Image 1: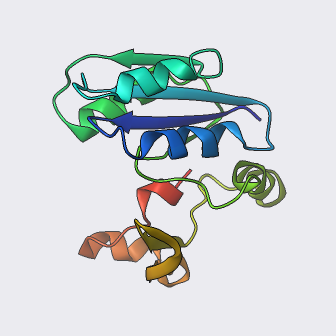
Image 2: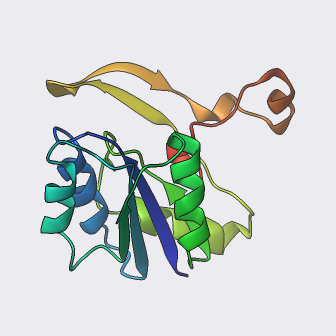
Amino acid sequence: MKVTVITVALNNQDYIEDCIRSVLRQSHKNLEYIVIDGGSTDRTTEIIKKYDGNISKWISEPDKGLYDAMNKGISLATGDIIGILNSDDFYADDDIISTVVNEFNEKSVDSVFADLVFIKRNDPDRIVRYYQSSHFTPRKFLYGWMPAHTTCF
């Protein structure tokens, strides 16, 4: 299965490289990586350009906000599975996408989501919040609860 990961960014020179590296290190090789930059004025696009040969598609232009940027990425996606990873987030290990694909294949499901770990920016080993997805049920959508979008495929 082909997986598309979309990263949206705006002026995030401090964290985008960790994000990009975490996607490019994934063990699943049938991966399309799309980066949508909202017209950054810092070094963000310079960092993206460093990985130009490994990023499937990227654009840098003004947009109408975060969700507009996500939708631009989705419209460019060609994967069987789509995930969104914000530019200040990263995958905790190199087998995340492989695990997601295995879940789709083994369970014949329409979507997959997982727990989310919030860490301290200057101390990645320090967990400050743990979002446990096992408590989610589709009925909770009615009350505004949803799985964290960065873990949803």
